[in-house]
Figure 1 (cartoon, each protein chain N blue to C red):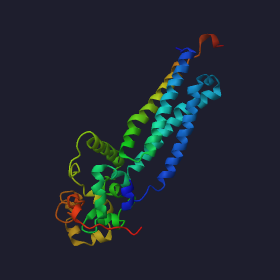
Figure 2: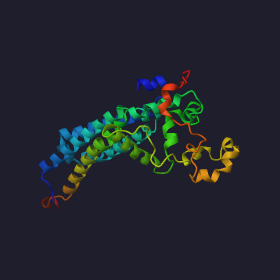
Figure 3: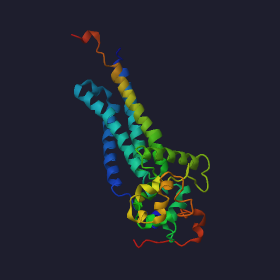
Figure 4: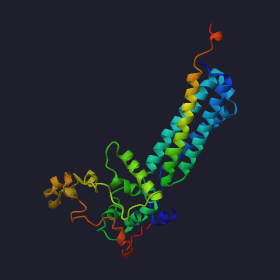
Amino acid sequence: MKLPLIGMKRFLRVSSGLIILGLLVEIVSLLWFHPLSFVLFAFISASLIGLGILVYLASLVFAAVPPVENRG
Amino acid sequence: MLRHRRLGFPEEACGGFVTGILIGQIIISIVLACIFLIRPSVTKGADWKILAFIGLCVLPVLCIVGGMNVHMQRSEQTQFCISCHAMEPYGRSLYVYDPAYVPAQHFQNHRVPADMACYACHTDYTIFGPLKDKLQGITRIYMQYVSTPPNPIRIKGGYNNNQCLHCHLGARSFESNAVHMAIMDSLTSNQMSCITSGCHDTVHNVAQLGHVKFWRPAQ
């Protein structure tokens, strides 16, 4: 199964967006010296980054099989 | 935090450097992710595919691991523990002048690392100890912000003697005390508590903080 290019682009955009958002939240959690900063990191930042990675890996799996016409 | 600085709790030492490196790594990850957000079509090329794997998988995983490491180390600091409102009096009790106050005596004489005073006496020194402490800490955060923290704060299951014996067992000053040696089995088996059996029973005693004298460090 191969997703169309536009689908792949969307996957990458969603993945990048989630990772960027998660990383920005992580920076805030690192600069904020407060017990809640760990909650922010563990429950929001790590979840967003993890989800972004999963979306990226999913895009790799779905795009892994090359189209039949290109085999040769 | 200013209040704690005035009280003289040590600042984060090398933690700031590690945090700085991690933030640098996060910024690199963000820049890479931005490239794939703005122009996802660049991943058609093999080199860019590798870069995408690094930018969208390897580096973010490293950022999570690094962030967890920094947060775990940070949570061991005295300053971190007492940044919770409910814990503030316990932090103040470390500066009580009276040497009968066990935590104050340990903190002021550097019998425990001053920047990790809470952690040194309250972790259980097992392989998953820091993780268990973190989970308990999340429970306390829940109590602080959602329900009501107990007053005074009680340790679930009581204070374990092993936390004292981790350092004191085998120490000359501890073993030269005849009373300690006579009741050693009861202490190691937790049948007799170090702090509630009438021997070292003045611990944080936060209810009396309004009536005691405080020690102020010179520096």
